[in-house]
Image: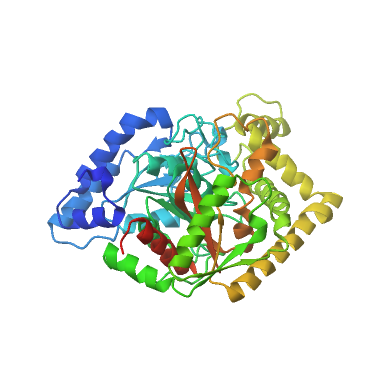
Length: 487
């Protein structure tokens, strides 16, 4: 089998059993990146130390020493996640040459598990955007169709996994920035429960919404990586002392069988409001096929109401920019980041540095967020958005009182063409309509490929109550088991 075709679980096992060396893995993926990334632009920076790291793993195995669960697995890391001695730009000119002196907690955990950090992936600047067209380092192309976007803001990570430039990847999800690219690129992406994964060392877009999650080619790899990075972190005040307790040691067939047994009798809700007027009939048909499959497996699927869903998108686009404008105030040319060379006084330095360093979409969101929190606007916009958020949390809590899962489309469309929505920010924002409620409520969700529309991949979304991420694993594995004809 080609090294690039191994799953993360099987590759790590092969490395530990000396069937493949970690050095061979790095060499294979490095050659792949060199071959295809010039046409995709998934990476901003590549690690110069990854071969040394692979040699250390190989030496430990040869000496009979124990290694971590992810030994030899190449991982791509979104560029808003800090990596010690490896450039971390957030896709922005203002941090073009920033090299952090420390690792984010999630990177520390990957390294302790002997994963191989192969590089930093391209992204919408400061995680602002849904197409990966807003990066200072150029847009990313969707490997499925290079004339189309991979989604955003974690599009570089999704593209890297799809193009086999990485086996798994980390992203961040503020309003759908993992699940939407996963759907567009035809892979699996999970946004875990808020607080499940440490945010320490992750450049914040919106503190109350951001969550680090994982991409993989299948459900098991995605959760296998999630297990390595999840858990309490005292350095993150939003971190909860709660862990996912999934047994990943079973064989693939046993895991599928157990999952298909688990789904029997479980209750799945379909919010009627998610099937909006104008939804592509082909997308609707694919989601209904998934529903039929779950019913054939013995799940109970029922329609429900999500009364305040219509307020989710407006609330999100008041809360997220407000928090973003506060977070980006620190980029002033004094403490770190780029600074313009010519200015007459400190006020002009601030103004010119931020004007030169930030892109168009970031500036738009800063202006929007600043407006929402100033004077009388605070009560009318930000304050009302927080009230709407409470209503959305209450709606989801009521649904999960009676149901194990919620199912919906991940996105209202498949991947759109590069440049198609660049001049129309509102149409770009509407791409988040199915994903933002989850971030507002802090629940967990996953996007799983379910077919194609006009030759382009599409994913369906499963959602679960907070800290019930394990349900997503079993439900996702059950679906993949049927698709792979395990039984």
